Length: 203
Image (cartoon, rainbow, N blue to C red):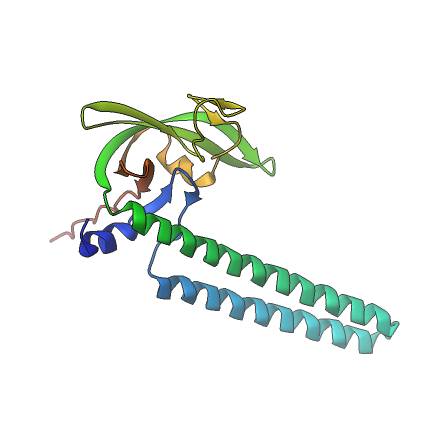
């Protein structure tokens, strides 16, 4: 692919079978989301700490209780910010992988099938999918997840490794014809998001 094609497709990829969801957009946009989230977290934590301090002086309690409460709030903020930063770092690593896969990737259509269902926290549905497509006269099948070599413990051709590759993002692409990019060299499948159809303006 040319650099222009890569720039076009990288912003249409919704996920890769090997790692799941991919945050779309340029690096500038992704960092913008990160900064916005941190600003929101800081505002929320500042508000909570202010409320805790005011309540302490209105209804005096041991200073240790106030210190522990503030430490809890700060720890929660730090953990949430760390999680967001880690998410962005992983996303950028996945972007670098896909830039490599796009070197020889070809756009194709594939048929997806759900091979496993699961509930996250007993309420959020998640699925694992298998995609089937033809390329260069051969039929290929891949399941979401790391797709380890045949013979790996716990591996089956239909399911891959149990519970590996189950993701919320695949709900949008379950049991239907989907658009993909396939890298023959790296044996990687990237799923393209469905383009929104623009409504025609009434005259």
